[in-house]
Image 1: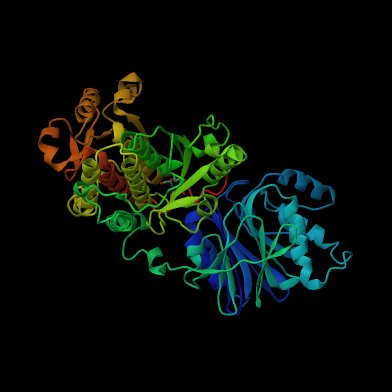
Image 2: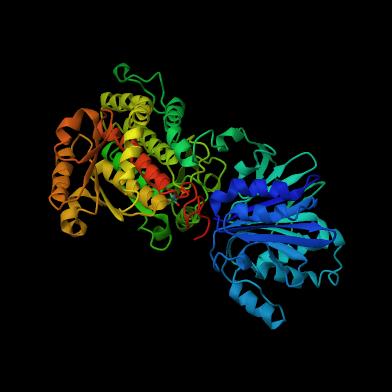
Length: 634
Ligand code: AGP
């Protein structure tokens, strides 16, 4: 959601804050602002819209301040207007606060402060925080606190009054040598430089400055001064935490010549799958040698021993990967599996089944709903006898994220950082995670013959070069086809069956997210039960028709759509193209592939089609309206 930055050191803070915000803009981009302390006063500049609006304003007002905080916003309370942009100041303009999250009891605090004469300038929940700190600071002298401890103590008292999930960075003109940073269920990391310190919502945004980082934990309050960083808990006790060194390369977060991050990330998919295979597939495993070890180096025992049930919790694209996971865990490993939207599961959890593995899937590792669902699952099973207790596994590319901290184990998908808001490579990598998990379980439970396991692995080994083939041979044709839909098409329908139904869902989500064209996906067999009424010659239908157990069924369902004048676009294999050509008006072809692993190929042309439609429409592909890469509010 929103992004927070902070800097204290010897350089001009504004430049560092703006470049930090640029790396966070994917989190929210409807307004932005920075506040610095200059000559004993807070200097606050804000702008509605994209960051370049703020940059323009700042260029007219360059200042040498060496301490500051900044924010890029995804609106929750109050419209995306300048008055609602962060930082928010107290009434006397001595304290500035940036927040990511939601303060649930803000109205009560606002009313209380109003009754004491405080006035508010915005509609946000955040504005109560600087005013509450100001109110608490009034009594700091009476509390006989030494000067150096006052701001920290006031923040401590304030955060203990706040309900909700939030991360904060705070400066005060009367304490010009400190930034106070707070984490309570919204991410915040500290970067350690030489005589300078940073804070940021995303550790990756710290990479240009330092690799020594500390991800704060829930309930941490950090005091950053030019001399160092001290960490306290909400009760005021000092606690020890140690930074770690990130081994990421800042180049991963550059566009590297691609027009958009999304396109770059689509083209990174072969490498991502290769890394996954190199990391997890055991090259010494051969079915005909009757191996007594797993083909997959995933090391998830004991949390995956004696499973009776698996439940997967996720949102959005990660939920689509989870649906493929369900198919694999049931059809390959033979384990009953449920998939729930994390936001639904939180409030209507399933009855407790013993020996259940709960999997959270997330590319950001910070999705508030997914994290809360996993935490509530842990809590409701705590204290029960061992077989009922929670076993939590995360599938994520962000091994340093919040989800990794709350789960017992993770499958690190090694997809690296994804910047484009529309998930592409992380989806493919999450799906790979499910192949590894189900193959490991299938082997250990002997759910399918070893020879079949080897066949699937062999198929997976071909995936990277097969994706390259699609990118090399189909890109131009897909771009050309995209022109047909960029101007007048208002609705799209996607259909698929079996393991490719989630691909229909993901194809539709990609299209609506970045091109703003309305798109729905249905299991192909469900069309005739209602959605077929939507069809006419203005509604194109994309049918994911990969050869295998349900191919003929999908073709028949596609024919039914064609009979209603819909333009039919088929995703199928190249070898099938001649025969499928009788059905489809247009075809997006992929190499020959085992049906069980076909989703990793069938999604690629759909990502490309969405990308090109949005790019032709001239839309902001990487930062589509109303969305954010990391959804840290409920
Ligand atoms: C994907 O293109 C979307 N931006 C969105 O649906 C996303 O998948 C969802 O918000 C879940 O995010 P997560 O994977 O970070 O948990």
